[in-house]
Image (cartoon, rainbow, N blue to C red; front, top):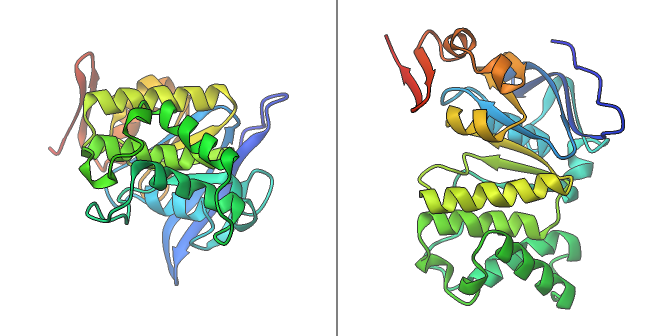
Length: 259
C-alpha cells in the first residue's frame, strides 16, 4: 500500500513505509504503510494478537523493522524516543508501592532532565499542569494505589503528557476505564492534538475510533486499510480484518460476533 503524500504545511510525526516487524525470523506484522501528521489521531484496530502492540513497540524502537521503514519525527525511532510519549497497556507500577500521584507524574520529566538531576520548579509545574489536564490535580498528594483503575490510567497519561511529547502512543488506554475517566482522557487528548501533538491509539472500541480519531489503521498481521473512519470502518473491511466475524456498526454501538 503506497504512502499518501503529506498535507501541505503539516509535518509528519510518523511515517510507515511498507514496514515489516519481526521477532527473530518470525514476522509479527507485515507491510504496514501510512502517515500520522502533527495534530492528528490514528486508531489501531484489530483482534487480539493482530500486531497493534508490536507496531507501537516498533515506533518506540524496541523491536526491529526488518524491511520497509518507520520514521518518527523525521528520525529513526531510537533517535526520536525522547520526544515520544508512551502509555502502556499494563503499567509496571505496583499499586501497593508508597508513591504519590505527583511523584508518578514527575517520572515523566526524567527523560528530559536525566535520572541524576533533581526536578526543578519548571518540572514540577509541568507535572502539575499535566495532572490538571486529566482532571486530577486535587489528588496530587494521594498515594497512587488508592486511586481507581480509571484514575490510575489518567495519572499514567499525565505522566506521558508531562514529558511534552510530539508523538503520543497509547496501548489500549480505555480498557476497564469508567465513563468519567474515559471522558477526561478524551478531553486531554483533544487538547494535545489541538496543540499539535500526534496521537496513535491501540483500541478495540470501534465506536470510539469512529467518533474520536481522524484515521484508522486496520491490522491483523498485515494491513487491511488506512484512512478516515468512514472509509475504513465498514462491515466488509471489518469482517476481513476480524477473520469473517459478523460486524455491525449501529447507533447503539458495535457488535462483533463469530458466526
